[in-house]
Amino acid sequence: MNMLNSTPRPWDRWSASLLCTLTASALFLGTVGAAQAETDASFGRQITTGAIAINPQTHKVYAVDEAADQVVVTNEQTGSAHMVKVGKGPIALAMNPRTDRIYVVNGDGDSVSVIDGKQDAVIATIQIRTGSYPYLIAADEATNKIYVANTYSDFLIVIDGTTNSVTRFKTGSADGIIVDPRSNTVFLTTYEDPAIRIVNAATGAMTKVDVGTHLWGMAFDQSTDMLYLGHTGTDNIVELNVQTRAVHTVPVGSFPCAVAINPRTQMLYAVNYGSATVSAINLTTNKVVATLVVGDHPQAVAVDALHNRIYVANVHGDSITAINGETNKVIGTYSAGKNPYALAIDPTAERVYAANFGQPAVTVVNVSQAAAH
Image (tube, rainbow, N blue to C red; front, top):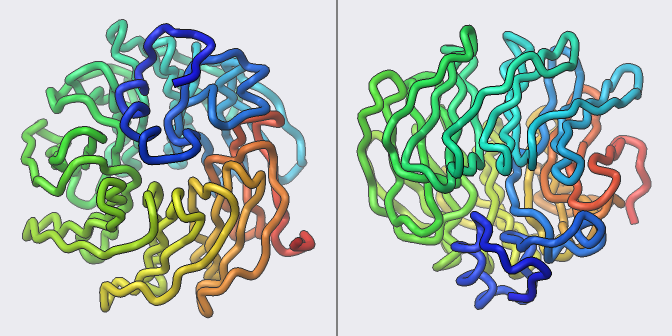
């Protein structure tokens, strides 16, 4: 790999195998200075679509700005934005709208910053074992528990949202995490591990289901107890019934790296990074009903169920593609910031927010008014 800094980083263990497959490496990235990270998505940061979120109650948008060790807070109602300093190398965040707390994973700082949404200020910093390199985070509103997956640690970190106290479950390292609040269950994946880990969040008891290595991107349908995963090694979407453990696969495009479900239509949208397409899958029939050409190296997808629209971040196209969920046709492509890699939607305002590798760290597209090109 062409790196300006030869020091190994946590995501290097994934990138070597991926670079053999891809012509560009925006999914798993090397180490360079911030200036190059702003101009070239092939270097600079590792990917996580959990880099941005909206609190639907306060209409504030929170996005990590890794290069500046901060979170950008955008107030949708006033249009103002300000920065909140956090730990070193913020990667991902999660929020509990009930408590108006935002939890930020600081990968290089081995910590989690707790932001109070009323003050938009850090009120606590929770340290994690040195060298763990926390990577992803998920919040369970029902239990007020926050779960942190680590790259270089065998433990899943559990934070009590009331006390900020920490417990640990030995689950193995993970780079994918989803919480099912109904069953108090956490689902974990690791790119090199063929097993999905299903963790009882109350006890830490864990079971495994082997579905194959090289998984990236995950979505869970609470109404059907189905877990959907992008299987980049075989260009399939893996469907796992978490109750029966039955596994089914659906062929899609090249390198499916992100998935999202529209619960109103029971459609799943799989982003195919390698073929610059999106596969629309009818979850009732488990068939691909449309394959849509989008922008250069799509990397993230988000669903607006209210308006039945789907949005795709094209990391090398500097754009966001909009899809009509009723017709499953592309309805427009909108300019975004430099290398958008994560999306958040406010359906009531018909706005899409993108977290960018380059600057500005966040851009907004008013999709009800913007002119497509």
